[in-house]
Every structure is written in C-alpha cells, then in structure tokens.
Length: 147
Image (tube, rainbow, N blue to C red; front, side):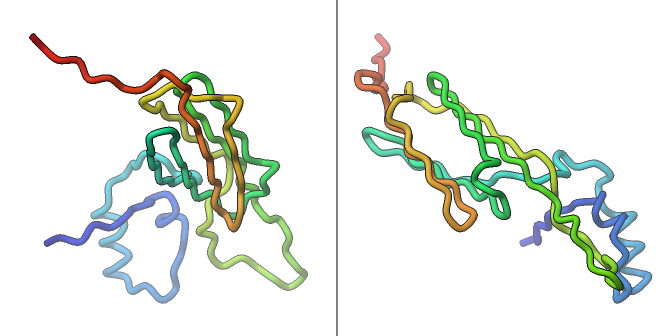
C-alpha cells in the first residue's frame, strides 16, 4: 500500500530546513506537483444527519468567534472566517519557520433538505464551530417509485 502525503509546494519551497540533507531537498522540489488547489487556511468539517436536523462540526482553530460568519439560505450553508496573523516580534527575535496559514477561509455547501433558519444554533469552543441546523417541517425527502 502506498503512503499518501499532503503537499504544499509553496510553503515547502519557501521554507528552508537546515536539517534537511541535499538529496531530500532535491527530491522534495523536483518530485512534487507544482500546483495544488488551496494554499490558504482551510475549514475541515464533519456533517451528521438525524431525522429532524443536521449537525456540523467545523475545525476553525486560532480564530476569534467574532471573525466567524455563518449564513443559511434555503438548504445552502456558508461558513467564512478570517485567520489573522500574529505580528508581534520581540527585540532580538527572528522567525526561522512559518507554517501556519493566514487569510480568509470559507466553505459553502448544500444539504438535502430545506433548513429552518429561525431555529439554527451556533457555538464556538476550543477551535470547533458547532452548528445545529433543524430541517423545515414538511421537507422530508421522499423516494419516488418508477413505473
């Protein structure tokens, strides 16, 4: 079985690791794909469904809850957050490596049922956004038989 490795060529090229030998550096630079989809912060999430609602857990670490925005329209949910960079450096201190991503992160998706916008609940604790999205009454999915 092969190992799958997440690649971020922009950060790998820009970052100098003094403990990396020359052969590894050559292989990392020459053997990796040049372009990858997203280079900024990402929102990773889990979506669960019960009979009456959807439950979303979205990882958004290092963000103030005031910088997170959630919108619900019909069955479409959008989550956006601004990950701010710490700019504090003390005298005599220099940055050797910077791997954390900064900037805007967003995620939009559609769910299988219309949502009751008035009863949506959101909480943010320890870097995890939890959304409880109740389904609108009478919008159950119905399977159609084919004749």
